[in-house]
Length: 93
Image (tube, rainbow, N blue to C red; front, side, top):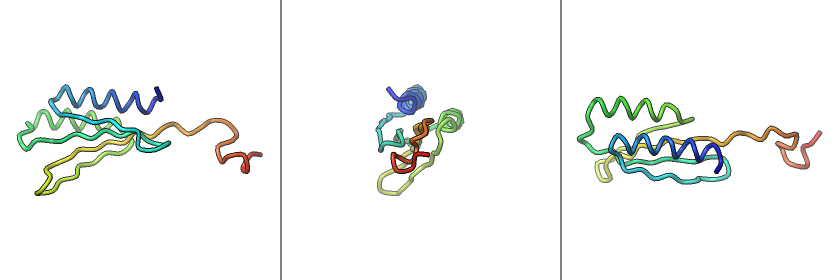
């Protein structure tokens, strides 16, 4: 399992411990993401824990609408390759 997926799974586990239902997905070759529905009744203490957890991600945010409620998201980037072929075969030195 890639490190980004493991990080995303760890974030999801901690959010689940706070009481949120989470989803983890591989978005593309570069990122893993976590999404969680956030209830209106989430306590201040739980929000603090949620913010500590998502701060471990590379990016995070909250999507809120009056129709669909609130969805918290966090993205963990996969590490860039460390070999000389980062740009592909045509970019090798």
